[in-house]
Length: 485
Image (tube, one colour):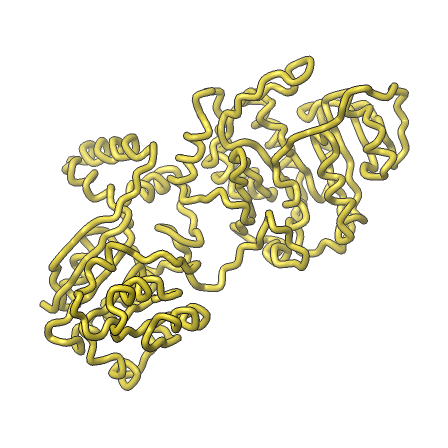
């Protein structure tokens, strides 16, 4: 049952003021509410469930772009509801005292935005799942639900009388990601996940699987993110855009803590050279061509050894090519697959070509490799770094249905081709190259041993070589030095 405290900005309850010191240390990224909708100029109604010290209303009402929104609140603590300072400021239009799980579903339908910050971790597993289902069920086609919770079992016990402040569950990241959020942000501080859902997520409510295991620690939560390929970096990720919400992430006034995620068709540039590729560049190379050079990190490192080296950097992103010009003898802003015969011929003579995390982005890497093979110096070589599509983390994602594209890494959204060790070798052979040197680049996370044990068991159950399956599932990337066959 909900008891009214404030109605239409007017206090209606006969409650004495509280002498409780009102403060809070929520680390939920509540600013996310300003990026949920593409048009903040429209009137919005917000329900803040578990409003605490009123931080969400302060954020909304202190921003000129959203101060016209109406914010209502529900909180289970009577002391909180007696904090008259929240209401005299005109932050909350309506306020009720009561528990989130007792909300009448009919009360939810009029809201454009339902906010559940720092709530579900205080509920038992069944109640948390039921509440999420109720909230999602109430959403209209253009309304949203925002959920914020620790992505591990945060050991918070009683802070006040009663059990409302005790954490009863932890929520693994895979559980909320599997519910198909439209956008999310994972804060590195205390590993807090902030997720925006549409009504579509109701179809995936069974994927919500919380845990009461207190050993599900911060370390385990971070390890799970590593498996998922998700970073806790305070960057708002737009997964799907029904509103379209992506426009909102690029609106003026973006706060530093929620930088807009942008997908410009290129993998984000890095400034660290691939040391494994660098070690394979022949010290006497006469002309090195780095395809997908980004900001020229590899060429820069190589020229520190060979200042007089002749180097060409090629990148499809003109901004990257411009940055690489500081280190390359020559740069070319172009798609290597789109060069005509005359443009391609200008890249020769050359005796060392580098494709560092590049071939997987091409439409026809076989053709490109054959083309280089036909023109490279007779004593030339080709250096390749390729991600491994057989990596245990990819298999884990397939097994859990978490096959999502990302900004970088194995699941880079700009990858067009996927290779395993076997199909890499087949491609090289088909394009006229032989392997001179092969190596691996590996990641070691706390869950790797467990994942590889599962890979071994699955292979053996299918009548395959379990040890070979583990061997092929361990490398994150393969590195090759190829010679003309």
